[in-house]
Each structure stands twice: as structure tokens, then as C-alpha cells.
Length: 339
Image (cartoon, rainbow, N blue to C red; front, side):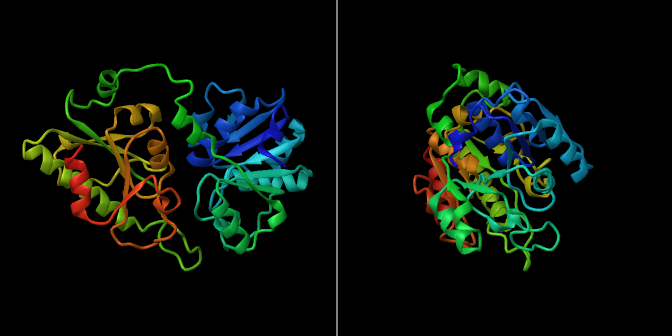
């Protein structure tokens, strides 16, 4: 089974989180599924499917297996295609329904971490409670790890994440001036823009063993970026404005964190065209978000900094050394000053 095998097929697609939604929406545009294909998506994933070839239904929090079975039986898909999220999700409901309806399931993993957790029972964390017929992963290192974690190797496939290629190529992008984008984000007309890529973090758990960096690293990194940017501006060495891109699961960033900095030092951004972010930014910095990698491949100098040093070996910069890993506050301050 290859990614190309889904082209022109009748599909039933399910997506829950932003990562899976953006990935599947991009794949669906390439596949151009057959007439009668449909999707069920959460409110978080829905925006990625706008103006695409797949009609989707945005489901509420109350979406049970019986309803999913009825929709699958009405669609009669060749394949059920799902994203992969931890905890309860549209995707898990659909996987259960597909098993009962006798339809094959292909799951796509959009990130490098928390692999077995995506297919574990949402409450007990029982591994491989959910067993798609095929699991597509974005890197060989993911394949090696998920097989080591107990996934059946005959069900595992490698695929290339299309959003990264699109970010690098700029395909489908009409020219938009930086001045116009600055206006959209309410940025100063002059000075450098530092893109801070936020990300979602799980609380520590002895049951789930999350692989992401601790939230403390994200908070400390944000303080580092804002302090360094303010220092450059206040020293009269040029304006530095932080464009703080929220993760789609974040409604806002804690005001306790931002309160110590002047409002003019940063701009909060939630939903937007990612290409606008990349075009207006002079530098991007974060931890392990795929958006940081997209920015890097779009030509934005990209850096990461893990203050605690925890998780070394599975950082995004370990997998993609084109993202420069910084090792101290002083190094962060230097790259922001030198823009």
C-alpha cells in the first residue's frame, strides 16, 4: 500500500487535531478522491478543508460509534483514512466504526513523537487498542521506534509529509508584499520580526510517558525571546517585534507570562495563512513544532533552544539539523541581535 493508491478512490476521512487536519487536507487535494467521498472533522481540523475537493461534516463533541457506522455504510468507501491523536478523538470513533463496518483503515501520523500513544486506549493507555490496517509515518526513525514499541511491522509504511514540500516550493502562492502582511499582523513598518512558534504540551504522566519537551521549556524560551528582543529595541539597536504564533489548541497565552513585557513588544497570532508568517519573519524560534520545520524549509532561519536539556536525541533539531540548536540564553540573544 502506497500513498498514491488513494488517488481517485472513494474515501471516508476523519481528522481531529490541527496537525492531522492540515496533513489530510493537503493529501486529499493531491488525491482528488472519487465522487461520494466524505469527511468528518472536529472544529479544530475543519478550517483546513475549506475550499477543498472533499465535502466535510463538522461534528460536535457528541459523536458515537453508531452514528459513525451509519455514515460509513452510507458512503461505502474503498478506504477509511484517519489522522492520529492521543486521547478520545473523532479518529478513534471512526476506527471503531470501520472495524464493525468491515472497511479497511489507513492512519497517518503527522509528527515524530508520541507514537504508540496515538493508538492506545484513551482512558487506560492500553497499547495498540486501535489497530489500523496501515499506519503511515513521516520518517524512518519513526518506523524503527514504533516497531520497537510493539506495532506490527507489516502494517507500517513510510510517506513524505507534503506540507513540508509545499512550504519549500511556495506552490500556489501569489505574491503578497511584506508591507501588506505587516499591516495584517499590525506590525511596525520597520524593524525585524521574530517568529515564536508555540506548541501544545501534555502534563507529565507515568502512564502516558509523553515525549514532548516540558512546558517549562516553552515558557522559559518565550521569556528568553521577549527579553532579548526588548533589550535590542531599548538599546536603540533596531526594533525587534515577536510574532507569537499560538498552537491551534491554544485559545491564548497566559497573561502571567506576557504581563511583564510592553504590549508593543509582541503580537499574538492564532489562525492565519502560514505563508504570511514565513514571508514576514526574519527568524523563527521554538522547540519541536512541525511549524518550525515548515518555516525552515520555507527559507526562514530557524533555531530551537531547550533550556532544560531534557529529551536530547529526539529533538526536532536532532532529526533535522538544518534547524540550529542553541545552547544558552546568550546564544538566543545574539541571534536576535544579529538579525
